[in-house]
Image (cartoon, rainbow, N blue to C red; front, side, top):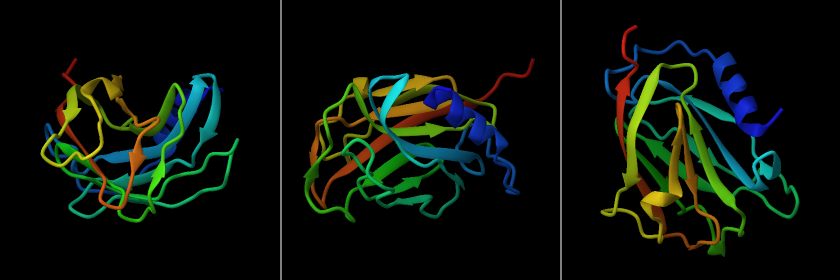
Length: 170
């Protein structure tokens, strides 16, 4: 099974009792978040654990190393998701370099919820790494943030602004 299919299956199996999701917002939705690195999508060099959380006013994820795979491991970061924004904070990490790969970054999925990503773009007001809008891709209800090859330090941040809507009623 490829990683994307597995992430969607695991996220779909996760059920949390939470307040109803806010319309046109990420608040109250269940998110699955993981780290992924590959040169070929069907042959991951690194496939991190899938972490789930219900989006709220609190920090959703504090990633720590998960174990080396093919010489790679998770860079410790704090991930805070709000109604229409994601912030990745590298303050827990000593300076380093995210390994080169076709894709090396973060995968955020909202498979259990009906959600449409209309747009995702870099929030230049907080982003300190040279991340471009083209490094952020959307496939269905899954967002991919490619940070391959970037140098970071404890003051590094990546902000992503999201435009989301609920799925149209059929």
